[in-house]
Image (cartoon, rainbow, N blue to C red; front, side, top):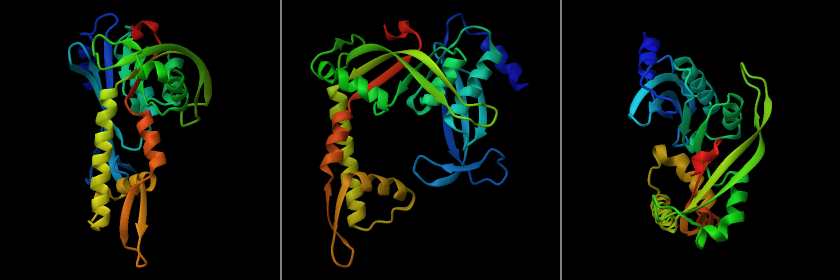
Length: 272
């Protein structure tokens, strides 16, 4: 019945439509939820999770299909299964749009292998993307192409050919595939300033929690990870925290890389 409903929903898609892939990870304590699996939640704590994956028609802002998956399913498998579901629903060429959480070498390799058109955001600290940012940093931070739809951004575009790798896993042999991707790098000094304010606010909040020995509860893993990277902690002889200062090297590196947003696509037209 569910597939019949999804097929009927897919009929509203026209040629060349866009669909968005998104998911929500939900914590469950139920003993009756068969999809619940132990996995690392975004707060850094291991919890029992399940994942709801959605496929939306962007123009109509309507869901086409959804699936409930175990919470420990990797994003690469989520993307691969979503591509199969899209192909089962319609034979039209649909372009998949997803966020950086799904964008890894492996998911790119799968989309290229399946000839699935896509546009996705990719994290700016991804090694090969970071190298492109460094290449264009001076242009982006002192001009760049004017972005009419959002003037606070400047941008540059580049076409890159590289090899992507997918690991061996159940039902999939490892493979390498070469792909030509079109990369659009955006920079905003406004966003950079906002990001810095957010970082300093978080630093102050976490510092106060640590100095006052506030119960960390569910935030514990997140604060430990943050403090290890960004804080210099001075303790007295008893081990009590005396002072916390910022790790300047890590802070400067973070500030240097903030304000950037990067999109990649398998189709050149998506950069226009």
